[in-house]
Image 1 (cartoon, rainbow, N blue to C red):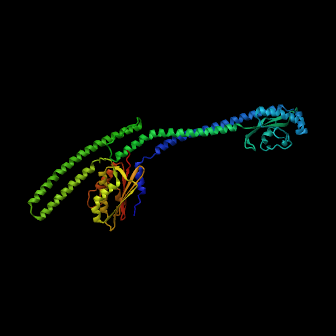
Image 2: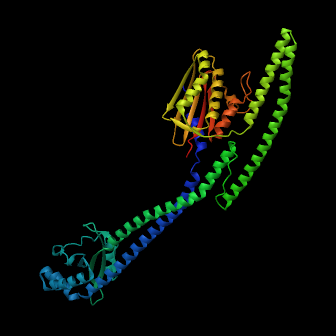
Length: 488
């Protein structure tokens, strides 16, 4: 049964993709205050403009209402109340007020008596003699006007859906008493301009936000890109790829950090070269006596006829060869793999791997299965990757002791990386040993030098990838390798 590797595979993928948290944070902290300031200023400008226009409109209505009051004589009020709409006074006032309406763009002029009854209406004769329809809406203004003040109402919405404003002025008789009042209704046409202003502010705001987003993105990229490059360089060094120089792309703190990190890389290279020289010297010093032991053992074997002694000498020669092989593997592991990328057909590659193990698989009665999920080719070092799969398959074969043995290889490709799973149904590995498997010279077997999986990880990291292991005792083991899709 397939092992669950999704959670671990996600952690490997995150290693190969640098998160955009810094960039998103920079954009947020740059955009949010500017956007907040823009919204605040726009709202303040809108409200200030509305209040100013409202105040100015109220003053204009007060002036018009007072002009209308000046056109009325107290004696005419008596005539209006007596003759109504049929009298000459009504017609005379209507002509006068029509001129005022046109000159000042006013919608309606009306006169209310002390009982709040309409005795004149420039808009409709039908309302004359009826109580004022908006008395409850303007009750406070009307009461203050009856006390002798010139007032104006707040904006209100009329039956036609438009906004209006009203001003009231008192009509005072010779006894200095308010006997009636004049009301003037004006349509708040400035609201149309405010709506246009609101649309302009909205469009301007959207354009402003887009501009800020572009500027924020460009500025954040200028900051984040050097950090991303530095992070990738640090990962390369951590993976053992220390040959490539770290480029210094800026003359600031990040540039200084790049310089310091490159100096560290150079020192690591120098130390690594010194270590290589030392290891080659040690290997040479070990090989010389081993060669002598092998040579003199062969001479000794020719001169001794005793069969048991010859077997002992053969054992000496065999262990000498094993020791020479161990020295060679140790030297190979100590060297940094030189990766030579080559576009490789995966079908052909795994056919070659299968051909190498075909005889052993038949002898051990092991099922072999390779599944390609759409991926047909990849750029990698063919020889190094063959060594990777040979090491893993060798470990899988040695770990299986069941009647039905199976090795399943699955390849799946994403946009930026390709995932390889090599799964067996062997004895599995305990949890405490799983973290140690990629360490040099660690092995759970009674034979072997413990360099196989360590070499696997080193080659994968040299390709810019990573490895993980998922295993369950008595169920099987899955080796997970993720390689970046090479560009160019």
